[in-house]
Length: 158
Ligand code: HEC
Image (cartoon, rainbow, N blue to C red; front, side, top):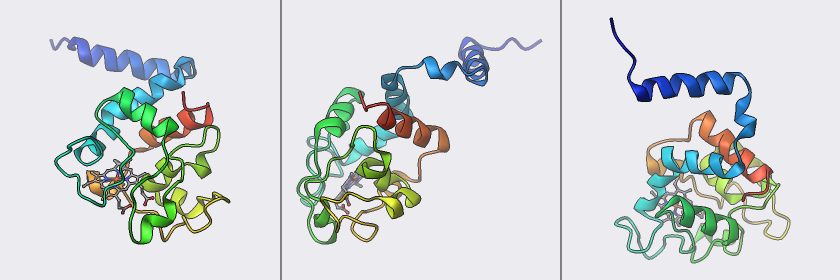
């Protein structure tokens, strides 16, 4: 008979917990770390000090080296060093706590969020100026990762 391995059991337990609604007990920080591990860590290929994919036009304030640097630079930083069309987004915060539709992080990851992005202080940072970053890591985040990020932002991005 096949005995489930420990990681497999852990997955089953996690799945059962989330079905029971226990995911609301996670702090917003846990949601962020999960999504960092499964998705945002790929952004470090370009957005990190001396990242292999970094070029002179790469956005400069983000640092996805670790979950903690990602969290901090996203929470406190504004887009810096953009040239050409995306330059309309220089000065735009990556995350506005409590406001997913004003958070550039979601707009670079999700086509719908790009269309509804609306930050009155930067009216030209719109669907035409905001670049699709999901394509640079091989695809859009799955719905769990996207929902985790929305929840993290809605709950104050801590
Ligand atoms: C292959 C390199 C590369 C990867 C991987 C990459 N980026 Fe970028 N990123 C860039 C470059 C270059 C720019 C500046 C040019 C632009 O905006 O098109 C940029 C700009 C940005 C901006 C500002 C965008 C704007 O248009 O206002 C954000 C936010 C961003 N990246 C987030 C991310 C996130 C989140 C990920 C991971 C899902 C990611 N990037 C993955 C190269 C990359």
